[in-house]
Each structure stands twice: as C-alpha cells, then as structure tokens.
Length: 523
Image (tube, rainbow, N blue to C red; front, side, top):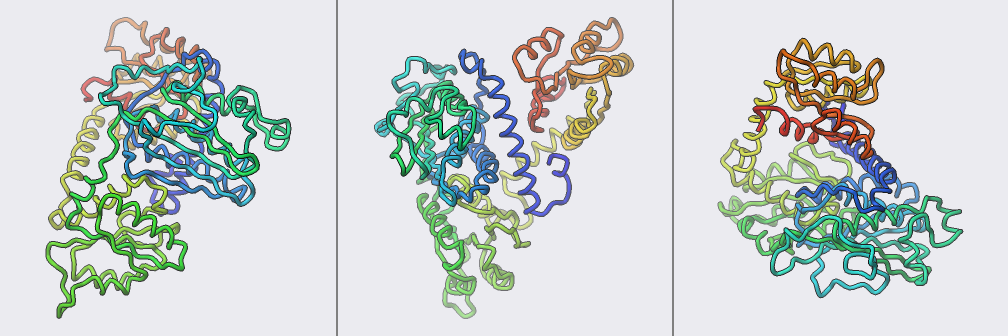
C-alpha cells in the first residue's frame, strides 16, 4: 500500500489502501505481542508513551476489524463522548492491540447479523465502578502493578480516566467464569474452543497491556444476552471544555443537509447532536433546495456580511448548481460525507462522520470555517505554519546521503519509496553486508539503514567491520532495520555498535524520527 501512496488515487482507492495498511499493521502487532508474551508475563515489556492522535488509533482499529465483521455481517456502532480530546498521551500501539483484541472477541461471539458497540468516554472518579469482575490497578488482583510509572506526571486535582467499552449481544458469559476469561490459554467452555477456535491468549495479553499502562479491565455479562468489557486508562490531559468550541465558530452556522429517507438520516441527527454539544449553531435541512430558506428574505436575497456557513452535505443529495448559487450569495465552505466519495467539488470528503470523535469533527468544521475567514487565496495561519515546517525539513533532508543495506528487492523498493517521499537528497542500496562494507569505505554517508539476515555477509558482521575501519572519513551511525523483533536480537545489534533498532514493518514517520535523531545538521 505504501508504494501506491504517491500515485493519483481516488478517495475510494485511498480508503482501500488505508484498509490494507491498517490490517497489516494490526496483524503485525498481534504477532509481535504473542511472540513477546514472555516479556508481558514478566512485566519487563517496554511502553512507548507519547502524545499522539487517538483518532488515528481508532481509525486503524475500526478499519482493520471491518473485514472480520463483514464476514458475519456484524455492524459496529461507535459512541464517542464530546469531552474526549483528539490527542492523548499513552502507548498507542498497545492501545490498538487492546481494542483489536476486545473487538475481535466481540465479533467472534456475536450472532450472525448482530451489532457490537464501542464507547469512548470520560469516566470521572465517582463513576469508576464495575458491577462484574475487575482486573487491574484498582481491582482485586495483586499481580496488576503498573509497569509504566506515571507518578512523575500526576497533577492535582486527579484527572479522570479514559474509558473504552466494548459490548456484544451474543451468548454471554456465566458469572462464575468471569475470572477465568482473563487467564492465559483459557476459554470459558470446551464448546467455545471447538466452535470459535483461538489460543485463549487474547484477553490475557490484553489484561497485561492494560495493567501495564496503569489501568484496569473488567467484564460484566448477562448469560444468553450480552457481554461487556470495560477498560479504564489514565487520562493525562484535561477533558475537552465543550464551551470552548463555540467561541471560534460564534459567527458560523453549520448546515447539515441530508434526506431523512436516506441511510444518512440517523447519521445527520447524530452529527447535529455532536456539534450541538459544543454549543454550535446548527440547522438541519432535508434537501439542498432548502438552502434558499436560510437566506434573509431580501430582494435580491443577500445574507448578512458577517455570517459564515459550513455546508455539511450527504453526497447522495448534493447538487452542484444549487450549491454554486448559494455560494455566490453568502460566505460558505463545503464538506461532504458518504461512502462513495462522489462529490468532486469538496476539498476533503470524510466518509462516515460517526467514525470520528466529536472533537475531530469539530476540528474539521473549524478548518472549513477558517478557509472562509482567511483572505481570498491565502492559507490560514495554521496552514502556513504546517507548510513552512514541512519545507524546512525537506530542505534539510535534501543534503543527506544514506546507504540502505537490504537483500530483498521488495523491501528495497519500499525503503526507496519512503526516502523519496522524505525528499532525501541521495541514497544508495547495497544488496548484502559485504557490498555495504565496500561502499562505505569509498563513500561518506550520513546514515546506514542495515538489515540483519542477508547472504554473503549479515548485517551484524558488516556493522562491526564498518565501525572498526581505521582512517578515512567519519564512520556513520548504523540503524538496524529488521523483522527480528525479540529483545535478544536488539541486544545483539546494540553490541555490534548499532545506535538504534527499527523492527519491520514500520511507518515512514519512524524513518523520519531516526533521521532527526542521528543525522548531524537535522533538527
């Protein structure tokens, strides 16, 4: 999918590529965590705590789980709290694994054509309760000490928890088996293993990850009706103040346009509910013909100069002529939604709005409003800042020279594509460790990206020889890029002189981080 990202793709093709990429990422995470179970069991697993987009995490999980759900015709309903911030501080890869395991189990035990629910909420301290069985930092297990030390990051008064609820309406779980479901290699009944399969490791891994992040996990169920798993994680940001959203959009009306008879009808109602939570001015219309009703009854009809409109339109009822006529009379911007991405005039179609956190939907509306507010033909302040930073990085990266040591032709192409997208000035490829040693002796590189398992000479031996070279130009830092993800392999690479270890597969931002960390002159 990465190789297609620079191609001219339609929005629908881009969505398909994202599905392929997301599925591969989550599958790789599952394999890595199963292989790494001994580290989870001993409590020595490392957590990469960083502030990143919760929306991206949810998109990755829900996209990856969609194919599994479609096999049983199971639908996923998401319910998001408007107070949940778009960016949170946690280990997002571990959170992906937690949600993927819980949603996967819900689909497995759902009835054909059933529904599963994912709720993301803010849980205040008084609401931190469980009617079923709880395992975690605030539960009854003595083994559930948090691996990551949050003590240095606590604030006063204590912040609330971020709560994830996954519910299915399948066979349910007997109350006397609640504790058993969290045990490794254990399933609630022989029939479960025979009919649904699985190793019985999913919830055990999930529990270790949750408690390692300082949270707790609980289960409640009504046999024959439903099962509900709840995860509470520390929220080290203040919940979103819903009153703040209306300040930036005080002069803007959001027009939500869809036909009640269409599938978009209930969706539009939920969009209005989300946006109204931020005290925004919304108007729901059943057709684009009703745009004329929004205008003051002047002759000719002209809206107030200081009023702006963001038209959030379901693609099935979009009419370009009616929108063009409306846009000639008022200050407005277009944002369309729907599964087919058929509206060419919209800057960025958003598919189903309900897959987004309300805070993300709010940002999208704010961005469309900022296009109206800014001077004609000039980007907003936020857009200018982003572009300036990107240009600066590209200019810096163009001065770099990087050696890629990789024997697999496909991996060579993927890595080349990544470096081209980062605007690296020059990069060369060695097909094995011996070629790398010879090329490095002749050429000064800023960085070497080194595979481990290769013919002729492996990466470990090549790294040792490169760093042992005497005289000549400065020896470059060596970053190992390999599918070997176990701790023992990382230790071996470190002993050989590698400055970092990058397990495959990885995203382009990981390569960018490596370049920023180890290449001189890059800030």
